[in-house]
Image (cartoon, rainbow, N blue to C red; front, side, top):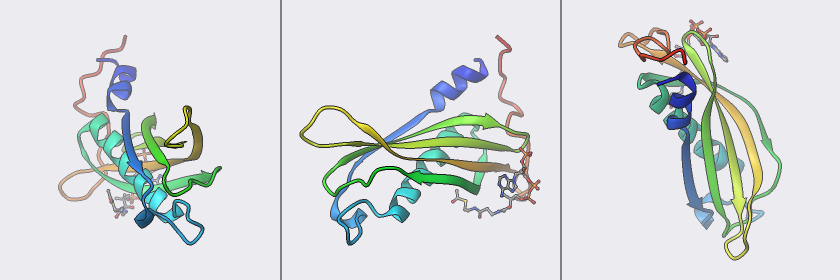
Length: 135
Ligand SMILES: CC(=O)SCCNC(=O)CCNC(=O)[C@H](O)C(C)(C)COP(=O)(O)OP(=O)(O)OC[C@H]1O[C@@H](n2cnc3c(N)ncnc32)[C@H](O)[C@@H]1OP(=O)(O)O
């Protein structure tokens, strides 16, 4: 498998309905809940990519571009964006769909960085043991 194929295969999508337990006093998706969804979907994508123990080390520039009303459907997509030595970055986008209309739009995006750790919680190379083709 090539690196690009491994990235494609590990792309992770999670859909959920914005029910009231996810909203704020504006009746829109609470930013902190959105960030939790983004952390989890990016964690799953990163783990599926390298199958190693990972911790979140940072999140970069999360842009809340559109408010997401209660009662919407959202889809969070996590995809490995770049790979360092012991860390990797995952781009996350959240798309907003209205329940009774076709189409969707990008509402939130951000980047999450994870570090691969060994049993002693020390950073280890992300790509070690992945048997990648050079194709
Ligand atoms: C899934 C979860 O819920 S995890 C819970 C939340 N996360 C945590 O508790 C993690 C707590 N943090 C830690 O344990 C430590 O910071 C560690 C182990 C992640 C990193 O320790 P460090 O001493 O910084 O390790 P080190 O300096 O070797 O850096 C390791 C890698 O992380 C990268 N890194 C470290 N800090 C940051 C940062 N703030 N932002 C981006 N990358 C970073 C480094 O550039 C390096 O990447 P590279 O090898 O690809 O070049």
